[in-house]
Image (cartoon, rainbow, N blue to C red; front, top):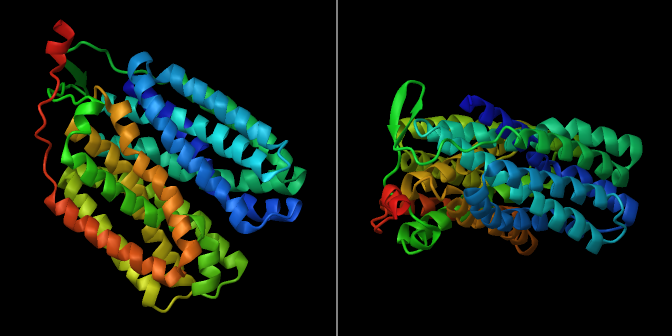
Length: 400
C-alpha cells in the first residue's frame, strides 16, 4: 500500500485525540452546571493525560505484536464510550472515571499506533514524519474548539459529551483502518526509490531500561512537557493575571497556542532531520528558558503574552515530535511502540507536576522554576551520547 495512506489515517486519528487540549472550554460550564470549583474540574484533564500516558505502554507493546490497526480501533471505541458515558456524569467521581480513565485509556490505546507505524514507514525522514503524525494532535484543540462551543451552547455541557463522543468514535475507528506496519522480515525496504537499510540495533524495552541514556532522555522529556502543560492548563488565567487581559482576550491564547503547538511538531521535526535531534532539542530548551524567564520578570500586554505562549506552544510541539524520533534513533524501530510507551510516561507525569506546581507557588515563581529546568535540560542534551548496550540483532533473532 502507499505509505502516505498511513499518514492520512494518522492525521485523522490525531486530530480527534488532540481535542483533549480544548478541555479548558468545559471548565466554566461544568462549574456553572454542577457547582464544582475550578481546581476540582481541572483535575479531570490531569487524570486524562496521566491515564492516556500510562496506556501507551500497553498499547505500544500490543501493537508491536498484533499491528496498529486493531489496537487503534479498540482505542477509538473506548474513547467514544468514555465521552458518551460522561454525558451521564453527575458527580466528580463519575466524571473522573468516565472522561479521565475510560476516555484517557482510549486516547492512550490509540495515540502510539499511528506514530509507531509512520516512523517505521519513513526511516528516511523520521523527524519530519513524526512531526506530521503528531501535528494533528496539536491541531485537535484548535479544530474542535468551535465544535465544542457549539454543542455546549446549543445542548448544554453534559449532552455535548454525548455528541462529541460519537464524532470521536466514528472518525478514530475510520482512521485506524488505514494503519499498517511495513512488510516484516525484509533486509531492506524501498522508500521513494531509495534503499534504506533496516536498523541493526534493536533494543528490547528491558535492554533500553539498562541504558543511562534512557533516564537522561526521560528527565529531559519531563522538563520540557511540564512547562508546556503548565501553560496550556492555565493559559486563560495567566493572561488575566500577568497581562491584565479580559477573559475574551485571554481566551484567544487557547487558539494561538494550539496553532503553534501543531506547527512546532512539523517545523522542528523537519529541522531535527537537518541539524540533528540533540542540536534541535538544545535550541528549543533554550527558547523555552528565555520565554519562561521573560514571563516571570518582563512587562506583559496582549501582544507580548500571545507571543510568549506562541513560543511555548511551538517548543512544546517540538518535544512531542522529537522524542519519538530520538527513541527510534537510539533504540531501533522493531520495539518502537513499547519503548516509546515507556518514554512517554514522562509526559504523563508532567500532566500532574505542571498544574500541581501552580497550586503551591505563584505563576511568576513557576516560570522561574521552569526556566531553570529548561537550562538543565540543555546541559543534559550536550552530555548525552548514543547507547552502548549490546542490542538484539533482528536477523539473528528471527533465524533462531
